[in-house]
Image (tube, rainbow, N blue to C red; front, side, top):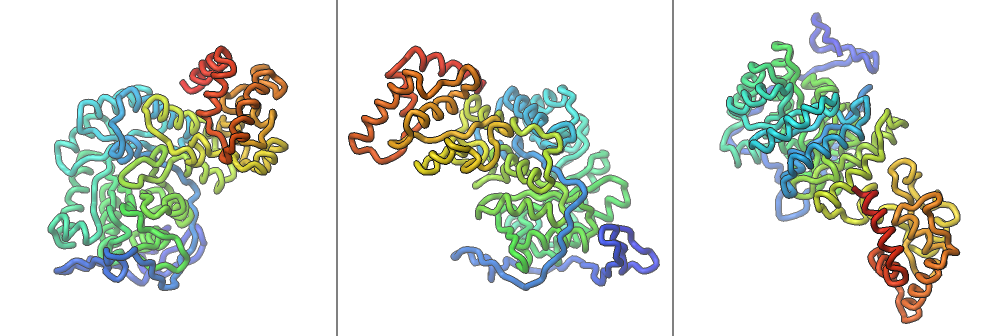
Amino acid sequence: MKVNKSNPTLEFDTTTNLLEQHAYRYSLQDRATPNLYRHLFDYDSIPKVAFNHRNVPMHMPADIWITDTTFRDGQQSTSPFTVEQIVHLYQLLAKLGGPKGIIRQSEFFVYTEKDRAAVKACMDLGLPFPEITTWIRANEKDFQLVKDLGIRETGILFSCSDYHIYKKMGLTRAQAMEKYLGIARQVMEYGISPRCHFEDITRADFYGFVVPLADALTQLSHETGIPVKIRACDTMGYGVTYPGVALPRSVQGIIYGLMHYAGVPSELLEWHGHNDFYKVVTNAATAWLYGCSSVNCSMLGIGERTGNCPLEAMVIEYCSLRGTTDGMDLSAITEIGEYFEHNIGYDIPPRTPFVGRNFNVTRAGIHADGLLKDEEIYNIFNTEKILGRPATVAVDSHSGLAGIAHWLNGYFRLKGDEAVDKRAPIIAKMKEKVDEEYAAGRTTVMGDGELEHILSVVDFEEYDRLSHIHQHIHL
């Protein structure tokens, strides 16, 4: 947008090609006591969703991308990664994001020697994407540390709800705003671009604090020529996307307001959500749709409490919205999941979309029959071609020789000449054992572990050979 200097209340929007009136410039609304939005968050009941029937226009940016917080927010919820593990996962991020850098940045801690060793090892790879950024405390020692590492951008915490300002920090809004602007100026003096984490934005007074702070930071950016990024943090997962929902919970309202009233351009806006109410993917996609270029995610959605937005989910969402992978290598999603399970020891719930062991396993007998005839009937897309994960069926009393052969080939990733035909003696022997189970009264499908055991009983040598192939594939 270009501001018409002769009439500062009008702006020409190059997206809509219309003059848009900006009649309001919001100023800080200081107060002696906090506004805790008790009509929405009374704490003793489920948070309420209020509507005011105001809708804002959809405004998808020309460029959208993903940023990663696996090594910062994500790592806070798991056992700390080793330097070697961080380097390997960082390389997988680069592979997944592709040459265009759809996964644009990845943020790291720099507090410990191990943190800094991981940063240096990843920087030494010389990969163009993802760019390495940091998250630091607001002190000069950390500012200098980031500068010494040669990092261009760092995240700093700017808590913006009255819950944090009054109850945690013991400040007023005016004091908090003065503190935050001082921090931003300090870090910019070191030549570093601040990424301001507007913590708890979905419980904050949007027009009384959020917009005035964002507007002041935007003005500071104009004065210095240093970009200032605003990360809208839905810290507690309160964001909702229903049409006409009222602030502070409206995702689209937050993005529109930051752009329209604080003048923050799409490329300097980032959404960071949590999954406390199962809305994290929809909220992130909505942020994209309404003008936010960047969504912040973690691999497998690891992170504080219920976790962050799963990076692999937003990769798929990107492809759905854009109609192209834009050079991303989606098979890296499978590699990430396997590395977490087999090298880090992280248990992925088996029904987790795209990475869970059973996400494309058909269990219902009638569905399995359809899948065996044509997998497109019951598979969400060509998971073998796109993710390197063939569709499989769970074995039950109706699976027959074909079903057991399909399970074995799918589970052990056997293709071409390696694939076992349904007429093979080993399949017949396995079917005998399966039939015995159901003849004895069993009604549930058989798990992978049970079928592995049956295979080992009927032909241990073949089981051992296939297991070694299976392990090699997962390394």
